[in-house]
Image (cartoon, rainbow, N blue to C red; front, side, top):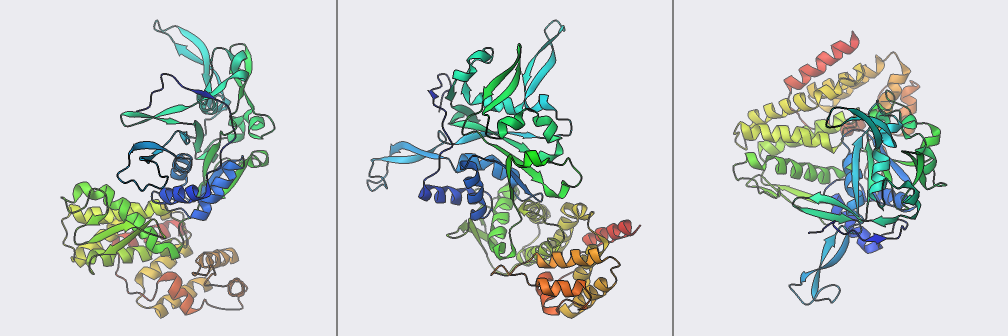
Length: 498
């Protein structure tokens, strides 16, 4: 257990690079918690080490906030001597085993932006405070950015004249009954563009630019320069679904951040994503399983087993061909079809899977109760995903309904072709083609070529190839009706037409 009674001061230094082999191992550990491509994690890491702040942008549910929260800890986690090793043949030759330590890593303060933010919320300002006698007095309250920066310094807040000579200090974060020691603390701003962020950051724009490493903060005598640690970073998250309805970010602010997009896993990562989803679902449902699920979320007796993979974070194996498995896989195909029009992240997959499996557990369904598990799948999609599809355009809803109600690939292709022919707006036709082009094969090539899409938009071709449609929409796999979910889609279609 660490103690913060006597914090050791140290020199302010730039953010350290992680040794290559260790970085690879730390990325693998991070990916067991969050299915994000290794290449994307490395881009974030490179950007941070090179001195920039970051905005993680993308659809909801793709793990942006979780990545921002755990990356500063996981990638910079160090090692220290622990207890005597169980074998003399350790990697270092030391008789002591190596154990992980957070002393080289970074804790984070997570704040959520709102439309009420002003410089007072980010930097600080004067606020009224009631004393014990209910008399109002005024004092300085530091905002989230100033407070986080101060956490990194060994300084007297009441002596701003001495801030320039301050030394760095470690920070402590509660972890159960212990306080974990970290090298520093960073700021994570969730929902970055929900605030009038240019206004809220105010004078911080200069400090974030890199030319000046001091943040002007309010003090009793006016303002004082608070040094910005050389290894301090801001990580923001931005929901791209809302970017057209929320506050826009100025070009000046954009220059001070690197924007890295976090997208849902591609279809060629299906097995890895399913394993991650099932593992997180089992961890949530273990209390309902009556002992049939292992507490570590790696086994559902007679149904499913999970394990750490070599090339992927997790792998899964179904035990037999049960109704639970068949309906889960049918739900996953529908989920991938929905993703053509709404880029749901893994979080949404976890949501419907927990609802589907949890409902079956609560109803005490037998593993091969086809009717019961189909009803649970229908309810899961209607209850967890349907409301998030209200923003779809009528042609997109029509396609989803055609997929759910067609019996074979040819029937679906005919309905899709009729829908395209009935589009009055070339923009909607172009949007449909862009959606189809979003799915790539294992080689990274779109199933629908740019040339093919252009010819359809220009009406040189009347339809998309049946085989392409069958692949993109899983139209060649038989499916059962989902009346609850279809009913919700029909109402959305009626509302949009009105």
